[in-house]
Image 1 (tube, rainbow, N blue to C red):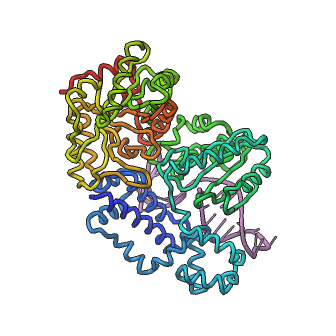
Image 2: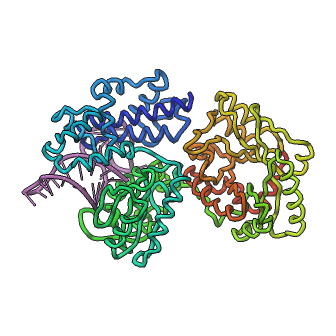
Image 3: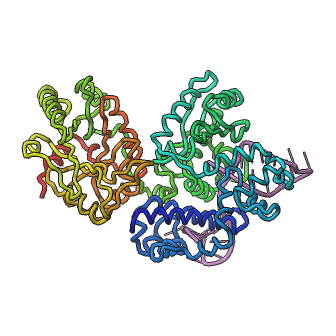
Length: 566
DNA sequence: GCCGTTTTCGGCCCGACTGTTTTCAGTCG
């Protein structure tokens, strides 16, 4: 089943959420929530298209009904329940719920009391000042409504992380430098390092919220104010990106970071878990249920500990089984920057020279480092080879290697000479282009690439570019199996434009016992730091450090590198 | 609709902000 149809299924499930909410008159619908969860599971996991009913039901958040809906879609291309609801609620009416601030209840009232069933009708009613006359809607002034309509879809639009992160960092920085601010942090999906971001959450520690909020609202980049309270405000900045700011006291920052960094389902499950212990958790404190007796306003670590859990990395906080795993002590031992022993895909800026990269590697505590060159660029290749040769002889604390990056063709082969092969310490097969191939052709192509004995790492295995290209389709199970058979490690790249492979693939590989490597993909000394993104991305894939080859000590890594391919 | 080492039935996180509500409903995250 193709990725295209998977995307369509996600769209269908999300439409089902909106329709189900309308059908239940806008009441908090547990059914709608279940469909929303199913949409997330399908969006995250390419494997859902060819899973049996039993395997689908076993996924956290999917049950009998949603599993059957997914199977029905993949079998027939349709969902009967969806077709049925569509006849009751036309698409144009559902579209109105995409206006920020307009929910199911209000949309139904507009239809029933003012005969408004689409955007044009709503705009006409606003012009004729009919909306404000409806009881309870008086405050929806023409101006407010117009602003909301101009941001239609902002509730659901997601932008690539590499576009959002610099904007968010810049806002965070400005706030951090205010004298009345003692700390400023990014939370939300940015802290979880999701590949696409719907809105930015900034948390600031200050005893003077009014002053901080007024500075925030006056920032030149702010185009519209959505809400403005005593301790929080939401605004739109350039290109319609929504930014939420919350100001909390030093006491509240722990619970607030926990709340605003975790996915919705993690929060729900964590709070239900607190209930079992007669405790209640919110963004201000952990307290005894039904009272104001505060148990803790400490750090995230302390809050988890008081709930009988280890600290859970934000990347894991998605409500995908992490709390159950924490309770049975089976969470992966995640990678952190301190446990990395080397970086296996780096490069250097010709004007800076190799030395700066070696310095950066030492500063990170590495004991091995591979500098890569592309087999197709012969000048660069010769230059790297000569530099690596010189430095290798003079350096004993750092093992310096020359990695050959070989782009694979549509069949999975790469052209490089026998001389190259002898000069490289190992090869990294890099997937690039040839997006038009079928799923089975891509699968064959990847497997062929890994069968080359010189290839020890597979990089950019999906070829995705976030926001641009979704990635190729291939049989994940077959590719992971071939990687294990050929003793090839799968690279987790750190470039924010790619974050390749997607986390669901990493998790499947982790469960299957595959080896991975986290690489910075640095083009100069400074970019060695960006490996932090690869590390955080690996958390989303539940990667255990034992399966990440560049956490291995130098001797063990060398042994793996020299292991004859059999 | 999902879920369960107290439960296969009866629960289901919790709070901020907005509007015009004099005590609460709707929306959002």
